[in-house]
Image 1: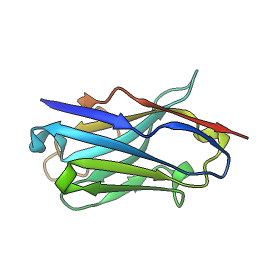
Image 2: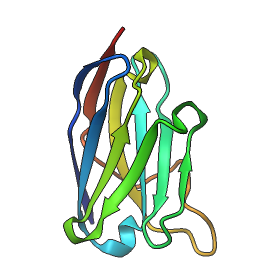
Image 3: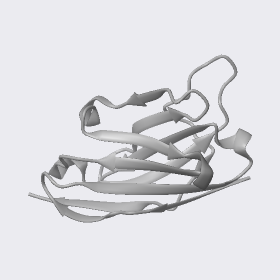
Length: 125
């Protein structure tokens, strides 16, 4: 079993920055893949970035490339999402997710088993 606890959301003006945190607890083999998703009102949930915690391989969604950075602190079992140059279209509920790593395959962009409660990001223009 894995428990994920997000924090760090808030309100910021366009162009500003926020850092989200996701503290992960439980079986490390069940959270080898970590990801951030977001869902804006009236829109489908979309993947923002995935992280293979063993290899540090990351995959970013096109809309956030060059602005968002995922990182991990293994000592704290925490994954971070640094969000810079925020835009109004980045406003959403952000969710941390975890999965075991598929055998001989990269981390998925969907079908995650474990989810955090979400943290709200608001960006004003």
